[in-house]
Length: 342
Image (cartoon, rainbow, N blue to C red; front, side):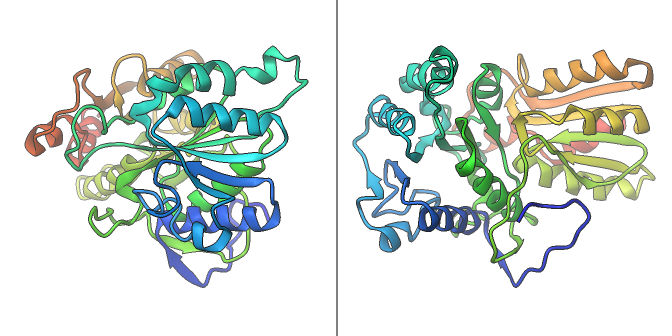
């Protein structure tokens, strides 16, 4: 089934985001033998962030494959399998590692359909973990949303909760174009890395899809618009709750996908509130915050009274916990930005 906005969906249990993702993958693998999973530690370990937990026991090593530490090799193999008619789900363990496979991702996965005049398609899902907040330093803590969204040819998905993760994963696997599915480590529901309130949600047992390019208004408001994604949806919601006591009614928009981007939902909100705050865990320069602000300036300038951006400063992410907390946008940073628009 497809999601219908405003229509309640019967649910029977709550899932973590990792379990919701695995449930969608399992269902698609059961329905189509051409769907398979490969990546580092996805089989015996079940993914270091539980992104493939239980799939090996269900489908065996022919369809859930651990690979050598060679991102260029196994992502390239995924591209080839997709072009041959399969539907691979390939895990890049950390988004930070994309550099060693940049040619395979940007020039092959993203461009081969265009370069071949559509004689081949690349129905492939590249899953990857993003984000910090657990002290893993500068090479394992980046989000890099803007890096992947910048070049054409790939759809880019960023769920913030279990319900969205399942529906978006079903849609990603069924899509005939390459999809980058970016999941935040902090949202997965791991025992050793507690999630904030919010990402564990009721999830239908039945299959369902969430269309790409449809943002979700998580909280309606009239005084300011906060646009964000991933972990910072939950931080924005907490900030909005705090601001209620100050008489500020904040609307919170979860983009859910960057490519395609639902700019119209953002513009409708900006035309209503007149004040825009964009929050992102990616770097401030040349990223999502600048893109959203530019769209608002181009298409809703007459309605725009104030703009603030809250993002990671352009520095390597520190290892030390106090320093990482200082650079990663928090609830109070978001609340302060909303206040600054008043």
